[in-house]
Image 1 (cartoon, rainbow, N blue to C red):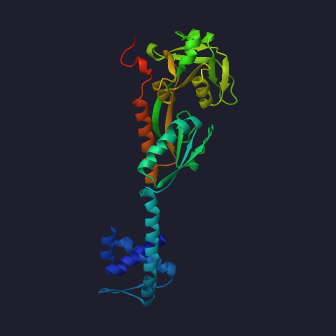
Image 2 (tube, rainbow, N blue to C red):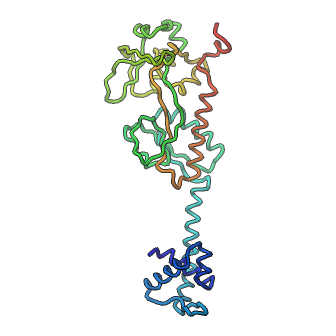
Image 3 (cartoon, rainbow, N blue to C red):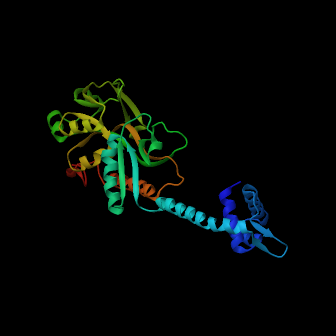
Length: 315
């Protein structure tokens, strides 16, 4: 027996003065209403309603029970409304999990934009690069699409990107610009090496030639398991590295880096917003995901990979 439903049905029968009227009000069949009240009386071991062919009335026990029920059901409704308000209102906290690069270059700027619109919402950002992210411990996780995820989560695409070669103008002035992939063998290459993995050959892809692939054994003048470390070294003229377009775009637009070896890329990457469930998602979480997706796509769409002096036509 659903005791709470039986209590609500009993209260409605008493208010309406009959089973049929209560059934219409609750959008239930008269038989269901009658059964629920009978089940409640059986559970309590007392008759709550005096039934005759002409009228329905409360027994003394029913009258006392109804008087207590009014307060109990009102408090339950108030508690429900309070909890549901957390789903609708733009207050509270959004807990976000993201790897270091996404946290620095995507999530943090999106948080600033989001809180200008919704200043009452707090954001807790946990930065961690894990092969087994604990997505169920957060309202939202920003992850690579290749991350291992179980079937219960919801993944919403944020952006599809590519990793491209780049170098600082100072480095290129001193060492020259590579024109073909094999030229990289004569340059200082800054390589990303995943923790615990061996530094293997670098795979290059030509998107303009049916994704033709080429592998080069490139020793790393600097290897690191941290993308921002390699970006910093590239900016300081340490060599050539391969980085995601969405990370490089503002640096290239500002003339601090230049793309080299176009159209060759080293990978295609996708980022997704992972949500533990679509059910009962607070409005603040849904709004933050929308802001993150829009902010990231607008940032990349509004930037060019060409340095300022080359815009408007090559020389």
